[in-house]
Image (cartoon, rainbow, N blue to C red; front, side, top):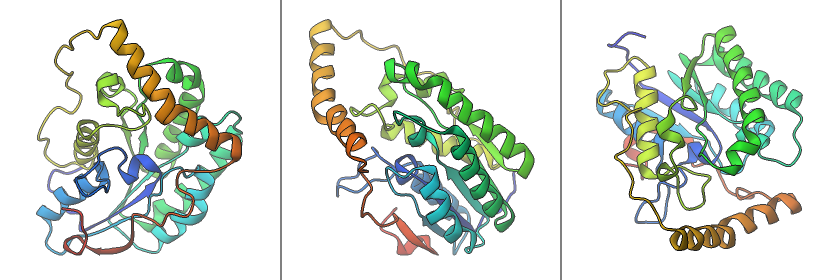
Length: 260
């Protein structure tokens, strides 16, 4: 990509990762990497427009069926599509269906925008990552193939060890912290051919080791506040995004958004 590339509009499609959880603002809303990227693009382009159709908890079939057709009508300069990871975290998943939905979304979006961006999502080090790693890597092979076939950019967040660091993840262990989202925004910024402002892959400073009692307390809090509710939703077929509207449903000038 050229360093003088001009992007006047951006549409983000996906789930909680693109909605911005857990980059929490004082008013209780979520910011996240897509909002951060939009703010930076808006500073370069007067009249810049932004839409974020992401809704937490969405599976790739819902993203392909509900969000991608809307995004395709917007004719944006940049569209980001991140999805499928929620599917891989389900007790059972048909990766053939995941592939089919991803192909459907990419085939719709790629010709409708100036540049489609796909991502290999990061994963937090730990037992969940160990268990689901084979599914995640199968998902990323699919994305590799689709990016090559359709001329999409592929941002490899999974290949950055710093984003697997537990300190980059919120207490729910499913969503990045504000620092993680900031680095993702920089990664996409650079992938679009824009001048780097920092090394988003740079390691964190050495951590102070946490004692066993503190780790145990943190594990119990995580299980009570996050793991058990998450399991309950899986068992009952509910989603954290049920009934929620898209984050920013229309492609509007950035200044009309509460995001800043």
